Image (cartoon, rainbow, N blue to C red):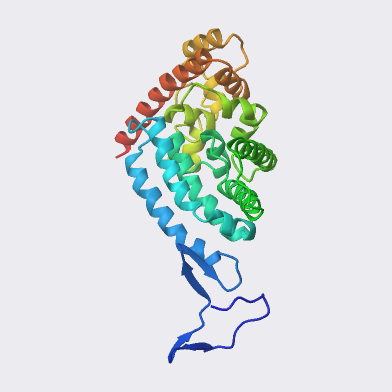
Length: 321
């Protein structure tokens, strides 16, 4: 393989001769698990890696159903396995990572984030990653590259970094990663409602020591679930109206949580539990991260209400079929 710039390339049919054997000069080569290309863009590496990550994600999807299945630590373990596959060799390719390889990398991460939060596959990558507490993999790759560079620099000087130095570097780089992550979340391409609710509590959400998202909690946080607006959008319902109240107003998360009379009793219990009448998405997230009791109160509301909505949806489907 011959490395070259964007305007230069070896002549077609170029080859070298070693011991009388002619070897063609190609545009890529595989070395220690990394696919190197002649322009050092690593696009071919990620083109080959993406299907492998997709297959791993598809296999894990069967092992990690939205209802039931392994608990949160197991899901975190599975996500970590795929992450390790994706970030292999990061110190080499991270400094040269372009937009297209980064997009492929983060698209694969979206699948794992959705599996971790037990969400619908329509949830955006930004929202799913934030809910799952999984930083964008391209940002993690930068952290790994910076750690490697510092270690290599000290080794060149004949020094060995102390454990406390390594810990200090890691803390600093992860702080920088979170700053970069928050900056990205300030201009999301999708998932605006979730991000606007969670971003003001970014650190609290990531650092909380309690609470695991369930399938029904994720539906209420994202709006991707058994809501008329969402079902109408994916063409499972003819209209977005609420099937549980007389007025048939548009069935959104806000309508379900704050307005619909069908859930008045559940709403009353939730208001008493979180100590206030503000049931906006941000207020609910605040109650969830503030205490374990607040988390359980929101979880109980979501489980009770969404279970009824799911049963009603199944009954409608049964009658239509």
